[in-house]
Each structure stands twice: as C-alpha cells, then as structure tokens.
Image (cartoon, rainbow, N blue to C red; front, side):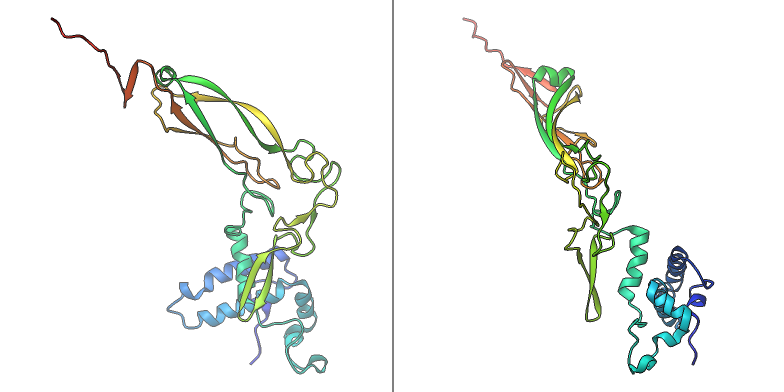
Amino acid sequence: MSKRDYYETLGLSKGASESEIKKGFRKKAMELHPDRNQDDPSAESKFKEANEAYDVLKDADKKAAYDQYGHAAFEGGMGGGGGRSPFGGGGDFNSAFSDVFDDLFGNFGGGQRGGPPGASRGSDLRYNLKVSLSDAYNGKQETVSVNSSVSCDGCSGSGAAAGSEPARCPTCSGMGKVRAQQGFFTVERTCPTCSGRGETITNPCKVCSGTGATQRERSLSVNIPAGVERGTRIRLSGEGEAGQRGGPTGDLYIFIDIDDHELFEREGNNLFLRVPVSMAT
C-alpha cells in the first residue's frame, strides 16, 4: 500500500516554509487528536501519520531527502544498509508534539515566558518598616532606601560588552534545553553549555562581569494609608531584584510594624487610654 504524501498529509503544498509546516501540523494535531475524536476509530492512525510527516518535514536534512527521493529515502535497502534509513523516519511523537506545545504555551517552568531564552524573573524583596501610632492613624508618605540589583547600564542587561551581542548557544540552538532519547521516552534537560540561557557570551560586559545586573541603593516612596494595621503588606510592583537576561523584575513587599505608644493602646480601629484614678475619700 502506497504511503500518502507528507505535504498532503499536513494540508500543505510542496515547498512550504518552516513556519507553514509548523502551522500545518499544529492544525492537524488539534483536529485529529484521539482524545477529541473518540468516536472515529481512524483518528489515531491519521494522527500518527501527521506526526510522522511533521517529524520529517520539520528537519532540514530529512526534508531535503524526502523532496528528492520521496518515501524511498526512508525505506530499508537504500545504499545496501538493509535497515532503517539514517534519516530516521519513524516519527518522534515526544519531539514533534512538544514543538507545537512549546510554540503555543512556552516551556512550563522553564522561566522563559515573558523574556528571551534563558530569561528569569528577578527575586522579590522584603522590607520591614516600623511607623509610629500617629502615622498609622493619619497615614503618611514614607521614603525607604533599598539596596538591590538593577539592570546594568553598561550593557542594558544583556551581559555582553558594548558593541557586541550574546551568541546563540551552538549546543542547544538557543533553546536552553537539550533532548536525549531513552527507550520510548525523550528526556529534556538543561543545556550544559549555556546553563539554560540559550546563549553564550564571548565578550562579557566589564561593568557587570557578564551578569547583566549591578547593585545599587535606591530611594523609594511608600504610601502608608491611614488606619494601617500591624502586619499589613504593601506591594511595590517591579521594585525588586532585576531579572536575568531580559527577564521581568521582581516585586518589593513592605511589611508594616507599629511602635507602641506611651499612652494609647490600639485594639482594631479603637484607641484606649488607661488613666489611673484614686478612690474618693
């Protein structure tokens, strides 16, 4: 039985671009997934066909071989080998479907959403601020000094010296992760060359030594609302530690404590004054 043309399987015309191939597979994968077609017994086989077609067409070498020789490029016997073609052709479900989900949703837990490959969000900071009972009652605009990491002015946070740019990691092709086949499963791990950043810096910035961030003391204005209570947490968005490799900045949390007053005691929204009186004689 002759196999169906890979381009036709994905609803594409020959010569389709890389983005068109990915888009075509994404559409077919969602359309033919067995979980969405439980009443169609042929859905699973069609889904596997689409996966096999994408596994070939997404790879430049496999695609070139297929464009020249068709399915014969992946059949045993070519070149006297008598076995599987060196191009594979079996279809790697984990790799192919992972490509689509990475494209749709990003890498879960990879720290890459909202920034370039290898980007990570900066840490949140905590600042304990003690105010007087009077300031807690009336409210106040307070200024605090915070020492934290900020994006390096010398390299704009890239980590590379002025006039140069980070290079795409040759090991992981900028993905920050590498995949290895173990039995029936594809195991993904952090790239050992770039430590998950997806890029390497050959000429690091002299200001930050390639980290992309420097330490700086900043003065920030904090609005203490009237009636604030002990233990109140005030969030200053984006005022925490700088992110790495273009990642978003963390937040600063101000935790309020209130000094004891020499005369008044506070219980909720009430103030109490204890006045000793003598008994009339």
